[in-house]
Structures are given as structure tokens and as C-alpha cells.
Length: 323
Image (tube, rainbow, N blue to C red; front, top):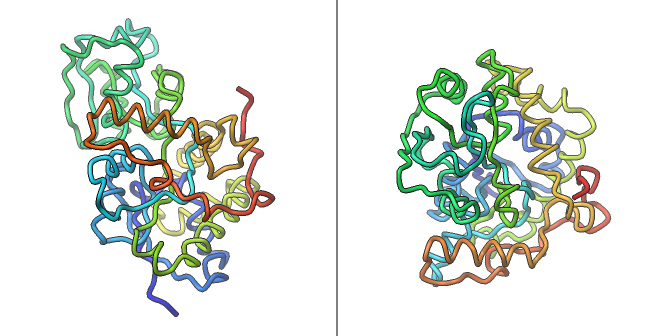
């Protein structure tokens, strides 16, 4: 058997990674002759350079960070996205729902908390451009505490807002004994709709040398997502078997929220989960290239390779919501 695939996840083990563990437990990877070693990550954005470095074969990484990498290294052999899991952007700034900040422009002059290199923070310039926010007086403070502590800090008034993912912060609120409705969200999917979120990305060496392995990995995960939709309790149990310390209720809420938000873009009904409208991808590339002043505007075909997607009849369309 070939050497095991080294896979870097987006974060610590959590409910919205369940499809990877379901695929492993039910032998879907083994059906394709694949053995996998998963490593927890530290942010969605950081998974991209870790695959680019050669340390990992596959990453669960940020599609927008991948675009940025390609634009910054136009002549390099870069990773490629092979399945877009989050076809809607999960990024948000959360504030107290009963506080004075009612619109994005009310964030002007405020203090905002963030984990280092958070994917939402990295895409803050795109949010600023889309909303017309005057960011000149905003103070951004890095804070490595768990999100459950940071959500509580926001409600105590330690800062005005918190960068993150909508469902990550909702789950963290539950863990902190806070009602998710106590947070108001300014969501990128509403203000910067061209962007998406997490994707399965593969190293250039893996794509070149073991394309059938890439295709098999994607097929196994796609099959497991169907199982997760059918039985989310069993899916969270697959995560709990790997980390018995997780808050099961919070992780189920996070998983269900991810299925209902990040994975429910309307175009999924037409294209199926894993794909993106080419015009929308080009719009995202144009925006990121301009806002981040990248050395080159990367070509979409080098960033996302559709040839590894499941056949049309096997794609998931049930999650898509009407626009």
C-alpha cells in the first residue's frame, strides 16, 4: 500500500470535520486503497501554506488564502483545490446583539478581538471595501483564548467584536453558557458574496504523482457527507471517539449550522456540493487580487481543478437553499 496521506485539518477536532472521520471509520478511504493520518490544525488559513511547504499531502484549507498564495507565487508549483466544501463564506464579526453596534459602519473606532491569522481577519480588507467601513481607527487585538472565553469577553464589554466563523462562535457561545442569539453577526456571505470558505486542497506532487488517490479521497469524503446529513448524531460520535473531551451538544450545533449555512449556497442545487460557478470564482479572484495588491492575477484553472469532483449524479444538492 502507498504511504499514508498526511492531512492537515483546519483546527482542533470538531463537529464540522465529521465527514473525514466517518469516511475513515466506514472504510470509504480503504475502498480506494487509501490510509490517512489526520493532524489538527491551528486555523483554516494556515492549512494552505502547510500543504504548500510539502509537510502535508492534503489540507482542509481556506479557498481565499489559496487564491492569495497563487497570486503571490505565480511561478511556483502551488496546491490546488479539488473540492469546495464551504460554498458560502463562513466569516463573521460578532458583536453583542443588544449593544449599540447595529451595522458594519458602526465598527469604526472600535476594538476587535481575533485569533492570530484568523481566516476572517485575513479577509477583513475585502469586507471593508464592500461595506465602506472606515477602518482607520479600529484596533485589532490578537487573543489566543478559546472562542468560548472570547465570546463571553465580548458580552462583558472587553471589546466590541470578535472575528471568526458564524457557527464556530455559536458553538463557543453554547459552551460558555451563552445563547447564540445574544450575538449579532456581520457576515461576509451577505456583504462579500463572491467568497467561499473551506476546500479540500491537494499538494502539486500528489496531484501529479497520485491523481487516482486524490480522486478517491474526494469520492470517499463526498460519500461520507451524505452519511453525515442522514445521521448527524453518529457523525458527532465519530468525532467524540477521537476526542472524548468535546462538548457533544455544542459540536452537533456547530455541525448542523455548518450544513445549513456554509454548505447551503443556492448554486449547490445547480452544480452540486464541491463546485462553484466559474464567474463567481473569477469575481473572488479579481477582488482578492485587487484588495491585496497581489503581484499577479492567478488563473482560476490553476486554483481549482474540477476534474477530481464526483460525477454529476453523485453530487449533493439537498443542502442548497433558495436565494
